[in-house]
Length: 370
Ligand SMILES: [Mg+2]
Image (cartoon, rainbow, N blue to C red):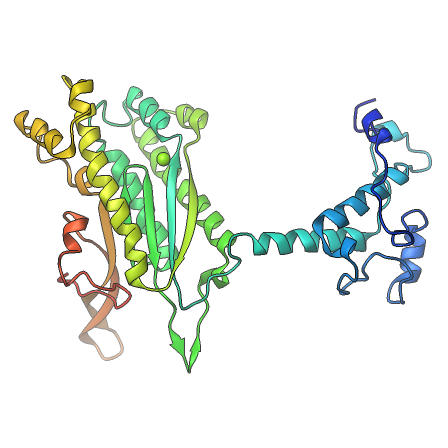
């Protein structure tokens, strides 16, 4: 008989949590009684379907879970005639509406965690950070799926493709990737007939963060998987490491606020890219690594290792821009020019762009020249 077949000794020793007398009636509620009670005024303390909790033990997570546990302790596991209980464990019966009330409280708590929703008037940032990437890169270099050393263009391509996908999925106006992280910036929604529209997924933070991390992980692994396939290698190394992304969501009042995130990560890139380049160059030692960024840049220059690849040095910045496209209208049988939104690379150092007046609020879709 396994541990789950019956309450363990520890469980047996548990005393029911104390609660006000008369509040809980867990012993007499059979399935038959539940059916009789359905739709009728309930004499018991469990909230009826659709009814708001009426006392503290029903409205708090701790109180409600204590009551459910008390119910489990007071009763015995269910048994079915002619079925050996050792074949299957059936928990003591707790009315369904008690489980529903408990579930509602948990869902409510999840909704209140951090912020449940971000209003349409706010900017949203999704910042995804890779996990297990150094191990994955090391393994794929060894397999010759990625370049054996130095900056990996193939890895950067996978990150860029994932970023484009994320921007498209969330209709982001700006995206940035460097190292093993990526960020997208979602502008406030439009106002239609005086009413502010909701963000995607109604601005629900948990929905957006889980979808973004799941989506990017899937996209990124598919990209790496294709590389393995092209090189005739299996995906065992990837399966061992399972590189994946987490996602943090932020909300901001304005572009003036959210640009702080891009500034911060672009700065991080400017420092770490140089450090990484030095670190991975034969002949660098601790003394070199302890130098400041400027000295490290000099050190790289003296070895004719500059310029670094653009993506490595400055990260990769993408923006949604309006672009003129030529098309053909089959109805009028004429060539037509239309404006389309496309995702475009904004090359060069990101921090320098902040010195350029043209890099203003991208919620007004930027012109292709910028
Ligand atoms: Mg990371």
